[in-house]
Length: 459
Ligand code: SAH
Image 1 (cartoon, helix red, strand yellow):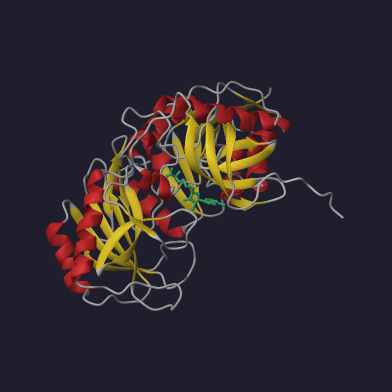
Image 2: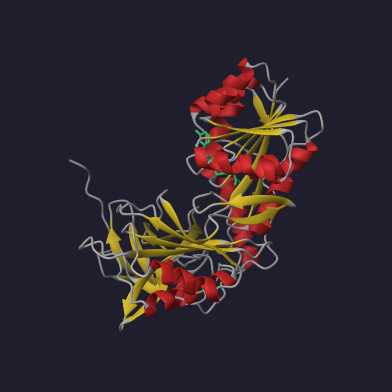
């Protein structure tokens, strides 16, 4: 039998708790009579009143009721709707404190892997709002009219109506409203999870930061949307910068909001934007960094840390549509890109041609397999860039890096936990960190952080 634990709270209790820290991911960790509470929208040093919403053996979840003693870094952004949705969990924390918190969290994550190294102050944005170049939003009918917004936290499909999403390019917010009103005038049916019936699911809007080009994607459950031609024409007539209206058919009840199945309704099937002066074609499913302003800072920093020269042959593993490799191509001898999604590689190849770049090639393959293939062909890349998705690098990739012994290994990560795990592995296999770990705030007001580190082999 498990020992009985004395849990000092029960469901529905309202207790006064002290907040000790905010963990990576944004949860405030508080304490009531020695028992941990997890809640949102609370910050270190605060005393709060919180209502218990879930009780486990080890901790309880709670909901903030009142801040009794606020942190000196707490501000009131005046947007309880945004807090309700979870779009921007740090919205009520002053921006300099957000940057410090992220630096501190990265330090802790690395210390937990027994990596004791210097973490530089987080590089932030000058205007840390309205930065996102893409969004996908749900909708609902309220009093017979369509509303757009975001799903309320801890609910399956309660839409909190929003006009200003705080983190989006303001023109994107405006476009969402325009598209919503057109769909409303056509009284589109909405897909219901319960019945499996209905057509519309989400609106996706993407806008080029420099180009101003806009793509609208109507995500449907059905292969067709009633009045789709008229709807697309009406969108094209009012949306500023519109270049593309597409239909994305997603009949599955997955958490993925879009499928890979697209049909063009109006205009072109892609938009263009530039990053560090290089032009990119971006399709409806292309991965493209959501904060164009900090992405330029990130890539510039990664290139500097990679100490690139005209003699270098670099690998851009996890290359997506080629953004890292192509923005540094003019600084190096050769760029070898590898990416597992064929369509992204096609985009990367279009981007090579579009920019008339002669020294870059992109291949569709699993990164570690292709790295071995390049070696077998006699290529000797001396700098490797990786920019993996949240789960980080696989053991195969790490072993391929160990095998290749690149002069410099530049790791860009959107998840410091998996990054620290992978760096621990490389430190144990004869690599050392070169310079500071650098966090960068790609996602202001949210709990995410981007981090760059460089490793070199010990010789
Ligand atoms: N560097 C790009 C893309 C980063 S996103 C940019 O900044 O825009 C990470 C990319 O890694 C995705 O495009 C994903 O499809 C790709 N990927 C995931 N697993 C991979 C693997 N095993 N081999 C190669 N690429 C992979």
